[in-house]
Length: 288
Ligand SMILES: NC(=O)c1ccc[n+]([C@@H]2O[C@H](COP(=O)([O-])OP(=O)(O)OC[C@H]3O[C@@H](n4cnc5c(N)ncnc54)[C@H](OP(=O)(O)O)[C@@H]3O)[C@@H](O)[C@H]2O)c1
Image (cartoon, rainbow, N blue to C red; front, side, top):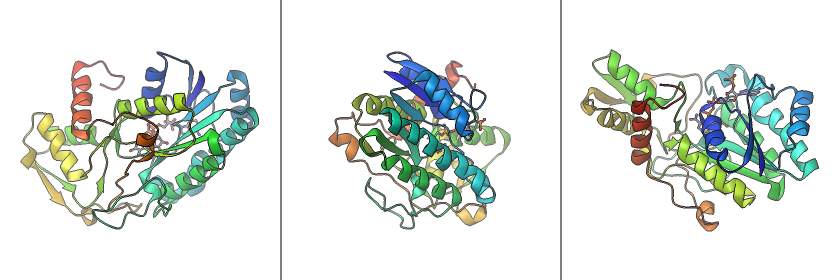
């Protein structure tokens, strides 16, 4: 299949290009190739490569700055997605849109969301991604919306990397224990995206590593697996770290549809973290 991957310099896009390159004709593009908010350039890019599917990983991902730059975030996450969706509709190509648990309100601890749960975002980033989802859903069978959460992997900035750095700089740290979600390794998500691209089945999917935890649990696991004393990490409430954007308290994504179409079970998040930390130790990464 001829597949165009947007956001190929990003954490997920890089993993998808690596994984797809083994079996498909892939073109990975990022901002220096084409700013997706420039409609003409984007259409010309698609015309040139003529993909059978676009895996759209590019996004405005800075959740806090989206609060004060709503239109700029929307231009990437919704409007540019609309440009790609129009091209796909005209050419009968598939569009895979990577979305987020932040399309949900997440007010209930111990709760969670199924694929058909109603979107109800509580921050600007979530609103722009929810709009992108609606655009892709309108493509019918050509559109795939793949929600994921709490990504880590071979990228410059993510939570496990921040915890490792802070542990090397400070004696102890406090991490919030009142937000629950599903940590997800970009390499494992890339496997699911390839499976979905090959299946060609439209709809909404929830793709995370299995299991859920709080940021505090994840931080302690990073410490433990990184050979540090987990007790150096203490729990605190989100009010200890006021941020511009509200976060859902519980945005656990439950998966049914991937199972229905025969996708293999996703590995647990602890196992995924161990594989990522091993890779980091080996130095065979883009961001050592
Ligand atoms: N990270 C998470 O925890 C998380 C959680 C749930 C869902 N997601 C979703 O997963 C997907 C991948 O996330 P990620 O963490 O891999 O993102 P990332 O590392 O921030 O990569 C996003 C890429 O998109 C590019 N991009 C942004 N605006 C662009 C534009 N106007 N034109 C062309 N390229 C543009 C960025 O380039 P620049 O660096 O130049 O801006 C960057 O290379 C996104 O759809 C995100 O919403 C992420």
